[in-house]
Length: 478
Ligand code: ADP
Image 1 (cartoon, rainbow, N blue to C red):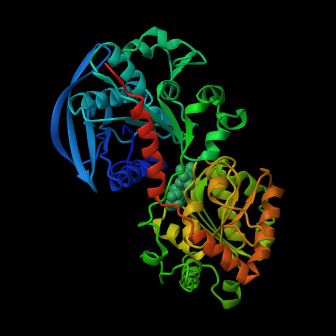
Image 2 (spheres, rainbow, N blue to C red):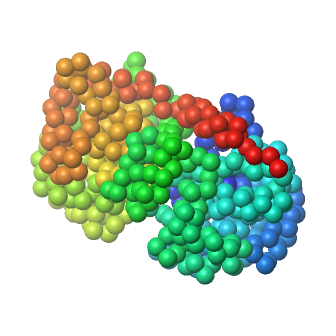
Image 3 (cartoon, rainbow, N blue to C red):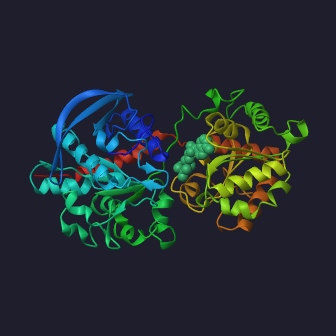
């Protein structure tokens, strides 16, 4: 795998969690996986295992490769201090580092130089735009005879919003020829896109849920890439992310006061009380009997915070307590802090990152809200299902694939979903869910159905392994 971040070494987002959990799950299935990533500042793990020359364009650099093995996964760190020994991974505040094209072209090139001397690989799995040049460089090396076999590449889109678009003048500096400026290659509105490189030249493209794989082929969700993705429709596969079942397990969660399981949910009451205490909300029996709603999110439009803002006057009048953990856009942070100040008996807010509170909300809330405008995979709805905290989500992307809407006729379902992205769509479903909450027996049935759903990585890793095997079968030998 070629990736720009992986837990526990470097993380800015969900990609790093996948880059940690998926290789470990593949190893559990009996596969061998090496993960190649930059040796960023602060990474102390690993020892030097090889020194290999890496050529990008006219420049050749001798690079030390460090390696560390944990849970059977070997992580290989590319040491190029001028590129990676910096304060941040991609840039300072909102500004990307100006040399990101060469920093990540170098990562791709280095990974393939490594593959040349450790020639046991059947496939290469590249993640997001930072690794998008991998299949392009494979083609180039194969044509020049430096790579004996054409390694099939699989490319995964974790977030279509980041497209690695740069000035075309980078091409010669990266050792790429001007014919890459074709529309059926890297050209994107007069510039070059590394994301497009990954999509156009890989054997298969995957993304993190089946629904999102469909959605991104439509203009509404395609971020300008829907046409490019439609071209590759036959090779575009949605595979749901899993969640870490050890880290997220209500029966063994040190952040919860009392552990619980689907057959004995009593511990949820203690978690609810602890959640209310943590956010200085009332803990009288009367209040704890009423529903508590949880939200954990980046506070941005993508996550539906514009809908929630439009409902600011309604939220305190739902007869429920609302608990929110998040950080993001200033206007939403201010709005929620303002609501908590006005309704301290009903709304509890923590702005910032807080792992313990994250687990307490997942354990202590009754209903979890994710009204996203779009959601490639989404994690919190799966944590919620596992913790018996009924998710209420907009039916989009990974949310639509993981939450089954409650059906009052059959009594089946694992949560509540709404389709129309509007304040009224959200409010109507919210009122409905809070009504169903009054029926304890039905509510418990929804909780238990969610807790029994399998969202472990093992199932997802099997799907990836199938894709690898299909790709390996198409391997072209020199
Ligand atoms: P995205 O990657 O788009 O933000 P995901 O649902 O895929 O959305 O992943 C978000 C992850 O970040 C979840 O694990 C969530 O619990 C965590 N998270 C988000 N905000 C916070 C916060 N303020 N404190 C702690 N964890 C958070």
